[in-house]
Image (tube, rainbow, N blue to C red; front, side, top):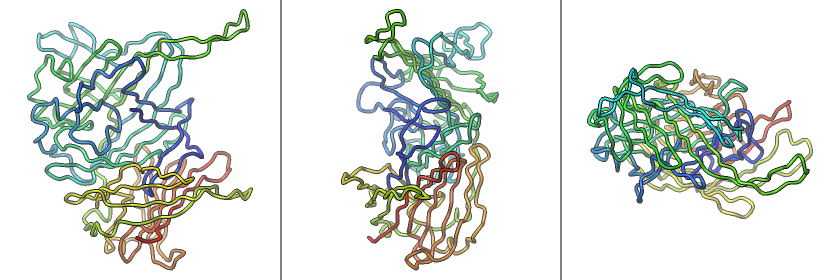
Length: 458
């Protein structure tokens, strides 16, 4: 399964459901982030056989539980969330990926008598960046921000925001917003430290286990538990902080084959060719903080308010050439709910085709759900600053309080990054999402690609 991040938004990017986005991937520079746990001719060393597999990949299997960690970490199925996992916690990781034609490099653990990592036999290892020559077939980097929005004894709801770009070449841009319901004791973002304490150095279903010192690329030092694994065409590691259980990083190197056209400069002819490629994927923790919203302590309205129909279009603003926008329709239904969270399923109709939307969960401690407490909305004021993330630069504020086109009084909350913005307008009377707008700022003052959806009824 692939997860793609594009460094620059394209005209093909649009809302899939009023609260989530899809986009067309583009290459070059900080272009495409590609995590492929099932490449052609390759394999994922962290994906066990059988139906409980899922692979280790940023973004994971949305809304899927149990996961492979639950199946292979003893006690994970019945373990509650770590104490620090609470609504409002934001975990931010750096993500990078590159494909090389015949080469590549990755962070790994190699034997070293003076290393900080130790296995069950007392053999020592050190961190190393192993490399090989080759031409770059595409690379990219970005961030992923994981917000804990609801915690119960048997489930944790999270929002996942993916950003293209890291600020090195251009400012991070919000690329996608999805939700997941994860196992509280073990998921891709953490493993309860009590479970890690019981894992002994040696081998288990997740691979070779090492324990000892670990330094992240941003020079933060931890005592860590490392799961190191290797197959015939793939190798990698997963690293967890022994004290908190938070995921410190992941690295994976996968070998596969691809077909391409080869040019012979001597004869001037082209011919089919096959190359051995290496794809490297890296991620590491760059920050964790507590986010507090003015409505964090409010109440979630009843789920029966959510089922709705939305209509709108995708187009350009300003529409200089008078090109008609593309009509879009959405239907939103409640799928299931738990204590403090509501999962929804959206279906989009576009060009006469029905397309399932990305999963979304509505909870109190979030921005961009389908419901907000009307009492909390009434306390917000136009121009009020809500939050600004120190890593991604993502800024949230109250853009507008007043009447919408249909005469309803709404509160508009805007989320903005360097290359675009999202706006959610809520009915002040009911707290139901009235409309959602996503604008992608085009280069050189060419305007914006805009998707707008407005609620038309139940």
